[in-house]
Length: 185
Image (cartoon, rainbow, N blue to C red; front, side):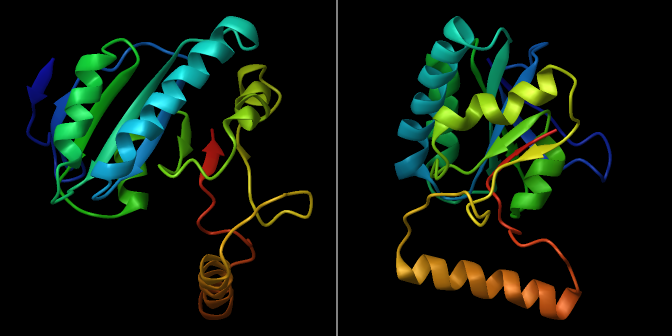
């Protein structure tokens, strides 16, 4: 079901919705911008993994939410196709301006991960389990933690480390992974 909506106020920037929000335990929000090539396989991977987890390890209801940040390629077309293919498991919103943080503010229900699935989905139970059990309110995974085992290109590693150091130097923040792509609340 595609639904066109106008923002209720200047706070909301959602301009179009595909699918409907369901009463679920977990919303997995994937913010995207010009990801037409990546989004299909990534969302299908998440859907399949969540089906397995819901059957075997975690007793919860869930939905994948694609948050399109004003893409100018065919990302929104692909997102709507995914909603039609998985109507009970995927919904999508189109936001009228770019920005991962803004997309999360508009769409965040519970969990968030990057479209490149840089964190192994095998760790999803570690992320959401403590929240579902009521032990914690916020959980995150970071490739910069000492126990993390990550393989990335030198270029990507340098850009990430430089960005984090700039934030620490110029803004005085004390966290070490500003782009952590695996969060839940």
